[in-house]
Length: 372
Image (tube, rainbow, N blue to C red):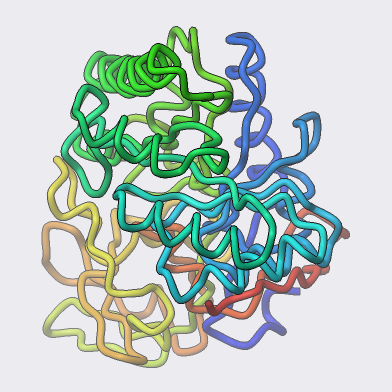
């Protein structure tokens, strides 16, 4: 029963989760490319198991703690998709010794040399993917630059392939732009792979992915796997991009009304930025959702209410355009749900999910593994 849960609590709607998972699986299945789901969004084994259904079994992680938790659950095919710090290579080697087929990511000759030195020390060729900059968003090397080949040669037998993440897809403003970004991502990865092979270097893995490009790709020729994670839950940023509908968002934060500022048109709740996070990812979009979009206790839309302000443990709800509110409609103790801007950031504030749609009228607890 929702009324018995402490607030704030993180809710997960399993039917929505399953629909989101099925949507991407169906899309990639039609393109003939497997999904390597990114677990950084969910960080929960019951969710990961559902995401892996029908897939070869590999996952993407953003922390070595995620890798360890997956390994302990019997998931061995793991890509660590954050540039490797030299100090973490011994931990990588230890996880591989325990049975993990764990690959790392890097974008420099120096990092490649660290991988080779550690590989020699532990008598194990630690596999690595070269990270590509396909859109100027973050890390990586140019797919047509000389650094790519230099890194490939430095890796030698540790070279497993290339990977890229089209993070700039989060700034696209139309379906056509998302499709173009997906093709740009694909072309960059395939170009890099072909250059490595032409230089006599093995490149079996060609890995691409972000939730927007994964769902809007029309052609994945030359790609061997796609990575995505936010697609599991979706969020208001994805809705603002047109990647999903608001009704597809599978997680929400349950809060309780604890006060009012009637003259300001405010409802005060016990869910602040410690519950929703400080992520204001929709602020640059056509529709700014504040800290989150408000729904009633059962998830139904309200009068265009948004979480317009937040302090550590207080949330301020108000009309999007301002104006007065009838406080009597939201008496003390009223339960409300807040849909998040960024699913990863909001979910990270909690130790697990109260899952709806598993048992009638009774939320089921699915724990998360937070930390690094």
